[in-house]
Length: 385
Image 1 (cartoon, rainbow, N blue to C red):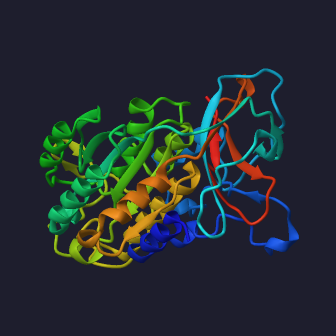
Image 2: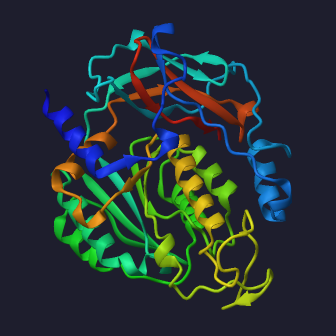
């Protein structure tokens, strides 16, 4: 048995994949097909009565007209090519071994129902370039040391050629260090991780994808440590933040921090919609919570259910996988090494998806490998510029 299989066994002993990401292949019996595919992404449908005016505008913006986010329009290939998009692809055998011998002739790319020409296909074979987003909101206050220790162990297990940028967020976003492989700079950045008020995860994700990442490179790997629960975003929401991620080729690997129990002890209070707090007008987010303490924002079961769905969605649309640490403090070096290996793309596929008619349109994206019984991960949608 290879070292990778042994490491994978250790990995799944310490971490588990959130259920929505466990079955990347079609549900048909493996014997009925001679190929394997990644999963396309379809945004979830929200109850219209739970959407604020701002969120309705976001939905109009993302689809071009007001309709359910789960609706899709089957497109045909454009006659004029736009900017090239380079996306990472991960392919594994049933036993967990990476597939490293794929040829260009074995891979196809589908943009909605249409097959697109692959203009470049190459093995990845490069160092990781990570953007680490760390939730330092009040819900993590009782786990602060565990989070710091986990981030420390994660960075200590990077390869010498790997780089990392560390960003913390609560009610505001703070860049603790720019992309670097300097261990001393990384250590100093980790020491700056401090809990703050609020959780603006929607604004953080939207800002990162709009301002910190190259739209079409696909070279960056985003790691998100969070419970997914938003309490203070005003300029972004669930839909608009994912919309920003869909316009980018970077892959996201979220680590779900289950802070539900500890959040019940944090001093966060719900106030009426439109209340001004510290010069900011508070507004509703979706959906309105119906369980838990109604006077404490970010503590209800509904809000935590939504947070978990957000974690799943951003992983699926980008081609990543969502994980939950069973015991953050007990995570071992070999588990982290395996995890980082799983984050390293095996291939890059380049195509040209857009022309003027495709601007700001959501298109489902699917990678097909002409071999059966493989597990394929690639981003599930892409919104053209």
